[in-house]
Image 1 (cartoon, rainbow, N blue to C red):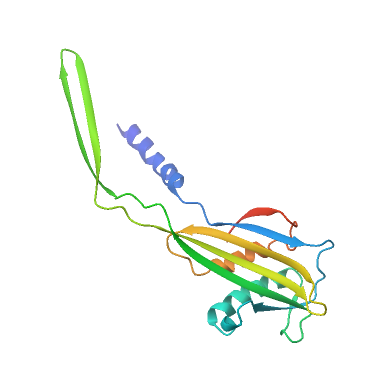
Image 2: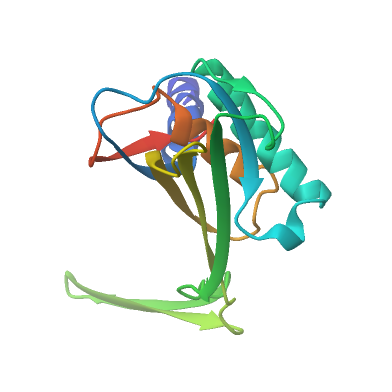
Length: 194
């Protein structure tokens, strides 16, 4: 009996690991001309000037600037930067597949006689299903050379998540978008968000 109990307890971590949800991932697509854009000074600005002074945008822009600095760029104010990186963030919410009620009533029975057994059961959900939400967040970034307004690089990273939107998701998308900058042009890759 003890051996069976130990075996059962040993399976618990495996079952929990199997039920764990994987981390968020993003689909990342980038476009650029060869050779890669030269490293120079860059300013991150919003495509919507109304949000430029918001705390939310400043946090997101700082994450993008850190990614660009890791790629070899130097941050500068828009008036003196050689490259302007215009950032757009879009978020949408849609209804997801409702979760079934967690409460169920099981009814079962069976008859035995003359060596023949018949059994049956019915599992009936109690209560209403819970509505869910699916949230899609996309970060798009376009880099233009200020001298001639030519686009030197652009890309987008998109993630879809169930339930409550996690606050730093845009910052995580910035890291995914600029990982391995400039990246392979025209190819969509899936990146695990950190």
